[in-house]
Image (cartoon, rainbow, N blue to C red; front, side, top):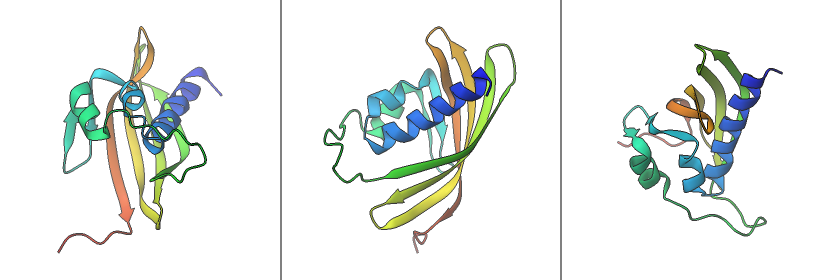
Length: 135
């Protein structure tokens, strides 16, 4: 496995783990200062908006406590798009206590910074949900 794929997997898996463990500050640190999350109906830009959306740091400290969400990540693919840029994509499934809630793809633009690889832009593509749309 090449270094870029390892780094892409590390970032994608860290995002999922931080989300599940409610470590918002650690999750936001995975992004560049002007990082973007495109949720389709909503776009978040910059660390302040990301921190507000992801709820800061309210970590689950009891490792045996039930989690509010569980993200499952598969099929991570990464490719270089320049000397310090790359794209990555993967499939995700997000479970809540009642079962599978949403599934889709993360499409990431990555940038190598002095602190390592970071997400410059994440587009969340929802392919399906078990929650019916609002009437």
